[in-house]
Image 1 (cartoon, rainbow, N blue to C red):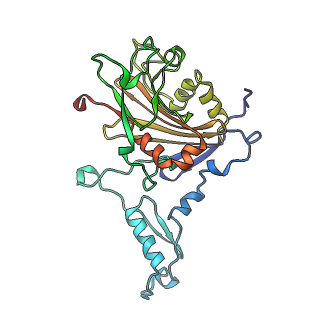
Image 2 (image 1 turned 180 degrees about the horizontal axis):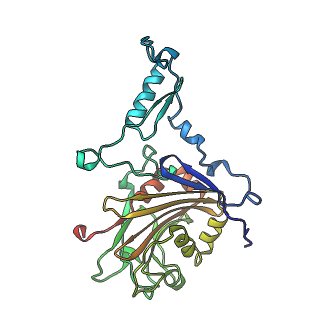
Image 3 (image 1 turned 30 degrees about the vertical axis):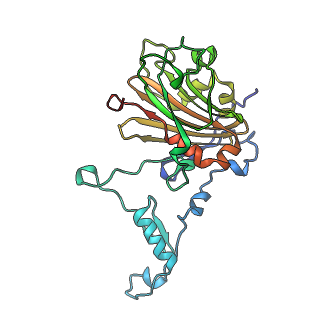
Amino acid sequence: MSTCSTPLRSAGRSPRGVVRSSGRCARCAPSTRASSVHSDASTQNSGESSHKLPASLTDGGGAGVPLSRRSVLGLGAAAFGASAVVMPGGLVVPPLAWADDEEGGGPAAQPALPFVEPGRPRASVDEFQTVNGFATPPASYGGYGGSAIEGNLVPRYSILAPKGWKAETITKQQKGYSGVDTLMVDPRDKNNRIYVVTFLREGESNKTFSFTDPTKTLSGLASSDYTLQDAIESADNQDFVKREDDKGRTIYDYDVDSIYGRYLVSMTVDSGRLYALFIKGSAGLFDDNGDQVRTMFEGFKILDADVL
């Protein structure tokens, strides 16, 4: 397919550490579909709207005008949420910051993609099957991967796939060029799938992998997957966050929404090996079964020696 050479536009940094960019240049971008827009306006609709205080409460005077119920809720959101609340009249109520671990406080809140932000519905893990992955070498194609592998291999990661989704045979091209290690698909719509890509250094099994540019790494993975490549090049919207898991690993998350489908991607490096989770689906999967997609996305785990 033809591509535009105009660089992508950056939309700047949005709340919660999310970096957003449009997937097309300003000259060739189509009108954005309503289902794929993640505008900052959604933040206002999610309960972070501003609230007004009577003037007597913002002018330094001591007039004790009672707060409305909405204003009280706004103060509560500031105390327990991650965003400041701007009260009408100019009063800004800052968020309650967690104390450092050394001071006995809880951990700092991690940024999250808008689609998987805390508070959005999740499906019960009882609706899923746990699939272990083994990060096998490139020559091990032709099987189903994941838990279908026989032998004494030690699993390196696990994913959650909906019950009823089936393992699909991994082809030579998928394994050798794209690094697909585990692949589960929805038998009712094979465009809906969850899979894991593993690599050492760019497919070289005798060298370790390290991140220098995660976006370049994602583009490199797409070079052997034309559907992912088309999605990235034609994306109406892309969200990106950098976060850490409970083991201190750096995680890079992407949400790529395009006319060719939508991808949630989560990449990390552990012991010199790249692990990348991909959830690909139609608008129906993300719109009608978003709770299921969020549980799948958060069910990706790197297995440490102490939990094997």
